[in-house]
Length: 167
Image (cartoon, rainbow, N blue to C red; front, side, top):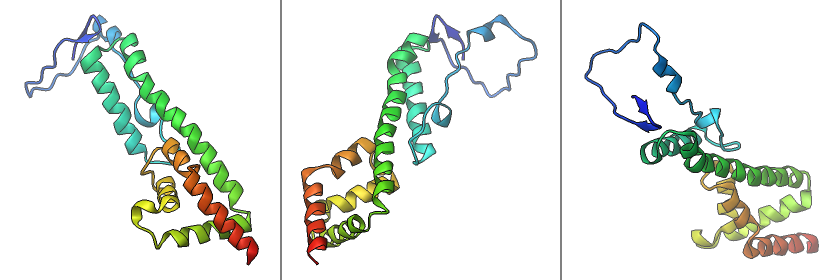
């Protein structure tokens, strides 16, 4: 790969090994870009997923917009910032989980609400889907946050908590 004026000029592979045995000024034009865990990764989630997302964004940026600093700042960095932003939601969610675990009433009410959902159609199991997504990484943290604090979720847990208090 040769970089000329911040664009990839050509990629040549003829099957023969190309080993650089002497230094050249061209190496000063190389662009180094961190992807995956070296750049950003999803909090408590799969490193492979973030590696794939950041590598894909880096490749698309290079091929569609060039390999200059401005191209990566405008097209690659937003992907990394979105992962970092989503991680803030993740920290809040896991903080809530840690605060909820010692609360016996809340834990019993949550269990009750989850059991009540078991009789419903899979699409209506909001709390089940929320917990599944939180612990498996099936959804981003902002989406999980919105599921957890949806009126339907709050109402289910509140009803279950009232039932626990009455018993």
